[in-house]
Structure formats: C-alpha cells, structure tokens
Image 1 (cartoon, each protein chain N blue to C red):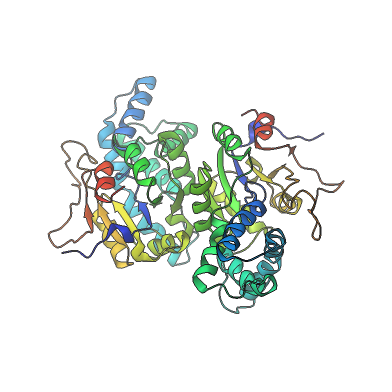
Image 2 (tube, each protein chain N blue to C red):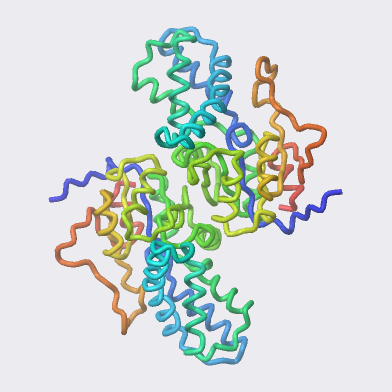
Length: 248
Length: 248
C-alpha cells in the first residue's frame, strides 16, 4: 500500500507537451493550413512525429555541449528550429523562407489542450497551486497558456536552471521556488521517465496516460508506458479524474 | 518628445510591493486582528513602516554577503523574518511564539491589491503578456496572486538570478525569459529608482505613482517621487489609466 496522503500535497507541477497539450494534432492542423495555402502535399502526421523524435537527441546534445563548455545552453525554441531546418528537405519543404520557418517553429507556442485539460486545471487550482514544469522555455509556455486558456499560478521551466528533465536539479528547483518540501510537491505527467526523475528528486507522482499522444495507431516510436515495477502515487484517466482523486 | 510607441511593446513586467498591492494597510489590518486577539496595544502603522524600512538595508546586506562568499543569498521571506525578529521587542511583541512569528511573516503573501489593480491587469492582459518582476520570492508572489486574484501570465522574481533590483541582470533576465528584446518590455512601477534601473538595462518604463503607499500623511521616510530630470515613457494615474494609454 502507498503511504500517499493528498492532504500533504501543497502544489502540483505539470509536464506540458503531451500531458497538457496535444502537440501532434496541433502541428497537423497548422501544417495542413500551410500546405493548402502553398499548394503542397505533405504527410504532416509523419512530419510531427519526426519533429518530436528529434527532441530528446537535441536536448542530449545541448546538455553535453554546455557541460563540455562548447558554447551556451540552448532553449527549446532554438532546438525546435535546428530540428526543423534539418527536417524540411525530407518532406519537400526546403523552399520555405526564413520567415515561414520562424512562423512554423512557433507552432509549439500555439498547441491546443486535451479536452479535459482546462476544466481539470481550474478544479485543481481551486485547491492547489498549479505550475508548469516543462523543458519548454518560459516564453513558449506563456504564449501557449494565453492561446489555450491554461490557468497556471506559475510558469516554471527547466530553462531557469539551464538543464533538462529528468535532471534532478530541475525538480528540486521547482520545490525550492514554490517554497515547499519535495515530498509536498506532486509531479503530473503522461511519461513514466519524467515521473521516475521526479521520484529520484523526492517528489510525489501522478501518472496520467495520454494514449492518443502519438495518434490513434502509432507506428515507429511507440509511446513509453509505465512498467510493471513503476509505483506512482496516483494514476488518473485525465485531469478531471485527477482532481477527483485528490479531493479537489 | 519621446519616441515611445506602445505598438512596439510585447510584454509588461510589474513591480509588486507598493505598485500592485497596498502592503501598509494590509499589515495594519492583520496586525490589529492579532493584537485584539492577544489584548495588546500596538501602533501597527508605525510597525509596518519600520518593517518595510528594514527591507533595503537587508537586501544590501544579503547581496554584499553573497558577493563576499559569506553564505548563500537569502530570499525575501528570510529577510522579512530577520527584520521582524529584530523589530518585535520595540513594539512590545517580544512574547510572540515561533509559530506566531512565522504566521505574521506570511502577511506579505496575503497583501491586498490597490482598488484598480485587478481590473487594470485584466484589461492589460487582453493585449499584452503580463508578469511580475519583483524582489519578492516566487512562493510569496504565487500565494499573493491566489489571495488577491492577480491574473499574471507569468511570475518572475529577482530570486531566479539571486540578485535584487535595481541590479540590471534582474531586468535582463526578464527580457530573456519572456523572449523579447529589452526595448519591447515595459517595466511598470511606483518607484522611480526601480524604473531608472530598468532604463539602464534598456527597458521601457511606465511610472504609476501610488501616493497612499506610505499612508495619507507619511512622516519619517517620505516616498521617493520622480525627479525633474526623470524621463519615463508613460506616466499613468493607475492601472486602468495605464491600459487606456497603451491602447488596451
């Protein structure tokens, strides 16, 4: 049995890409508008998957480069653009201008929430302080919250400590800045690897699987589900269910 | 003539103590409830003024100590408590328990807004991203926003860079994290010294005097008004007037 008591929780921090917002459908929708306007035929679902697949390797390179003193740490806007530029030729989009690339890169600032996200966050906010804890940079998260109506009390990002989750310093930073002990902070994510990182830093964990994150019939990089020996404090169907389980 | 164009502004950052919230009346109100409950007679207006007067010297000591390597930087919660403990005997409150002191120290997390603050921020938010840029720590600012209904898009604090305004790095951090050039960022404050610091870092400035910050008839430390040679981009009566002047 878990010794978890929701009454000991003082604040909730949320992974964002995939957990709060549906990045894949949002990219497909904006991409289709772009290719319709330009008279191009593009497999935007494959494009979105390839863009997202470049994310972890790019973060690993940025982290290794910064640690080796090879120039500064790079934020997610910069990494998204680097991946995008490498990707465009494969999808017949090498002709996009610099302005078009910059505009497309900002699609990550305009992602749409899952259907339960706003209602669930509103209900959770009535009882707990709620914050992002994303690898996305703060400007991106602020734009997204304004676009999607996400009612954050605070916007925290790995950018503040110039590292990336699951580095434990990112989770510790959130507890320190929110003025709570790690054990009073609940990390909410759709990705077990993120929750394992939070556990290593002493946080409590809520797993909210998002089975449609990679589409209805994912192929290629399959979503990473929880393992049989994972022990998260809460498992919820969505954010409204999470609020119910936490007594909010 | 100023070359200021509100259309070039992408985001607004706000000083908080005195500019957004009325710290003095809030402390007097909570103090009166405390002394009534304990049957004590305390001049809470003088107490609030003395507490606030200790703020700048305490920040200077914290900054100097951190620079000299004498232990870590201290946040405002810690500085407020240090000043409070030194102040209590002078006001006949030396008998307060540790729990009572901790509770009183958190009054800074529960300050009330000026009458125009929430309506003005809502209107400004419809057009610009709005964020705190306070010397107050993030946990304090989050609690205050939840208490007072302040609709921030983002909560930024000098704590993130472990310095205090008017250090230029604090203002530069805000522009960097909000993803805008310093000249696209407007600092809003009731204190000319804060705005001069913002100007030195390349930000635009809006001066919103709060003549009641130190009470209706301030004595002792008088409020520091703008000097004849100060040149701020906007001067507004309150936040609703500021929204009007910025076309929001």
